[in-house]
Image (tube, rainbow, N blue to C red; front, side, top):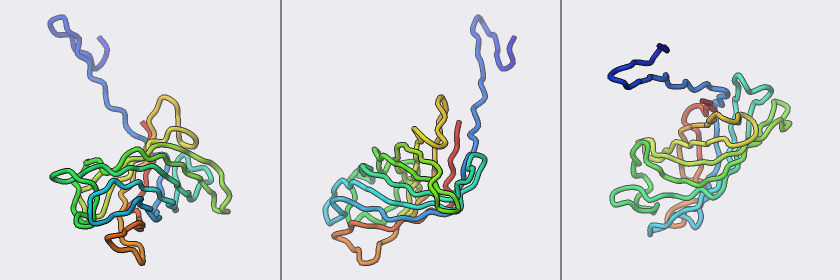
Length: 192
């Protein structure tokens, strides 16, 4: 009988160990600006988020010469959160979103990877969603890489990082259209 299988009353029960994720790249810092349209105001409204962001301090088993990268994403749409569920508005900006709650989905992201001489050495692309972390003004960004560097057919490759938000200089409610983003910890790209 194969290891991990048990025959009982004509049934075969098999236990398959979970596949461990392998970290292929880690970046130690990241920052950017999230652009919000139409902008957060006094009434709830779905926001479309776009963001140029940079990551740096990159290394890992599949980094090659990569030391840093530039992410560009678009079409990320906020989802209703809270109780009762509602789109973002000024009065709810500091509210804590429970860990795991979907905050935004549908983003399309591309990353240009660079070496220490600032020459582009690779690109990757994927889809992006944001989830609550249980911390005010923070989300977990989850990127599923679907092509380019780090993508391997038949495997799932994801980049994850917690991101903190703060007001961009000169921005206030009720016309908040830009927030600054800073990674709260390492961005890790893993593959299963």
